[in-house]
Length: 314
Ligand code: SF4
Ligand code: SF4
Image (cartoon, rainbow, N blue to C red; front, side, top):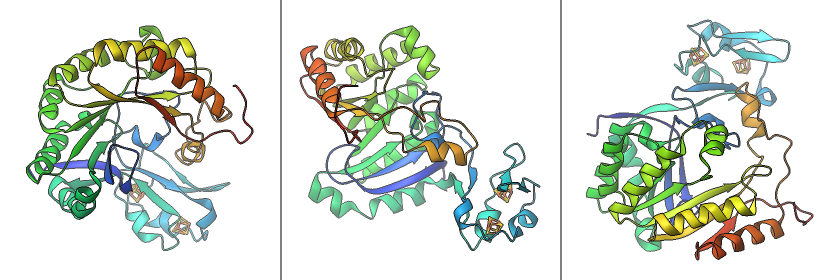
């Protein structure tokens, strides 16, 4: 079990936003969804991805020689990564003393990962915290997810599974026997919008909701609030009503305000962010949407996220 390998792209210690208390959040790499507003573009692909930071580069081009795959070249604006050729070996990253190259994602054994996250057990116990397994989508690396959950469960460490619900049914069922809390993303309940905005069918999320409800495990639902997409009273009311009807033991409904801090990450990965120019939301908008969620049945609705400096109704 400890030998199972997973690909992760971050381990965030002292996290306070992914469940109760002080937590460590482990981010698995790879996701079956492609949400238009995704704020972690480095989480989407399953393989490691190299990025170049021009501000740190010395321009000596040593990395180009170091790459065994011929994936690096000198372009007009600096080092160019040919992602079709890159095998993710990270030799260039180790070579670059200027730390101008970075790799998102690395394989790690579950045993090593467990050792790393269990070092902070005193913080977890004293704060009522634990470990959150997030992504990407953890269900997309099923053996690694179950192995890590099992080790943490046996060690008595509180676990939260942060999921969009899309994954193999049997894996979710088993994960639910091990996890202490589920953080479930429900972005929109309209099937057409869900398919168009996330690339995935809502009926798969709905199927996961039924399993989660049957498990009786505590759930926190999370809904991203995105300008021109989900920042809509009727939509939020529909999500909250769905949650009230289908997840009666939901303890909290979090509305997460849009953030555009990810724009630079898209550029580094050679991708464009469709919402790069979208404005942050105003406090009054979030208050109004939160009240709409409460009115529709999500009594424990709350909101968080970056706000526009000048307030106003978006
Ligand atoms: S080795 Fe590092 S500093 Fe040198 S060219 Fe490559 S990225 Fe730039
Ligand atoms: S990770 Fe390996 S294959 Fe990819 S660019 Fe760096 S050295 Fe080349």
